[in-house]
Image (cartoon, rainbow, N blue to C red; front, side, top):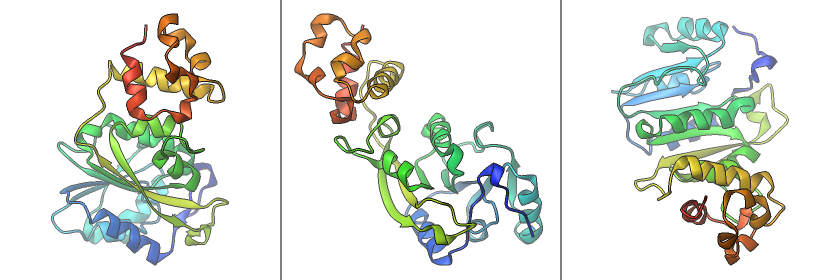
Length: 250
């Protein structure tokens, strides 16, 4: 068997109904290469290894879990990359799907890492702390809409699929979880540059209680700031409106 390590934020999925729901959501997309992030005790892995004509790899930081998976699923010869998803090189040539019960303490960082590979990743099925999942999927004018929403949504359509209760895990986390699906958009936002877009979004939401005019004053000339759009708060702007504003930045 294996030990659960709090230092790595390990909460392993044990509810087979939830496992089947996650696998079902993945199989609604077609793919020939698949990366699992954080296989842990193998709740998803044992099903993923059975997928026909799929080149499967997993990335796991905990060496003890790697040895466990290699022993239990030796007949399936699992390809496991020993390391952190945040530090590895892209694991495949060509397109690949991503699935995982993402470690909650680095889940946002994982999303930003996957954005670096976005040209190769058409679909992501991920489990997050519910509040984080809601932020990724949030729409403008909602309390959850913020930096994470506005930085991921230019590239992916986000669908909140279902809640996962704490009782589905061992040990139970102190929070509710949620599963979301990210599907790569065919057309990206038109921006002056993604560097400008990211700077604008982060600056705007870092002072989200202020009007946009006061929050991003340093990024625009005074005559531009007279536009009524700057009367709004950051949470009221769509990603398309942020993108349009990049062309008016200094």
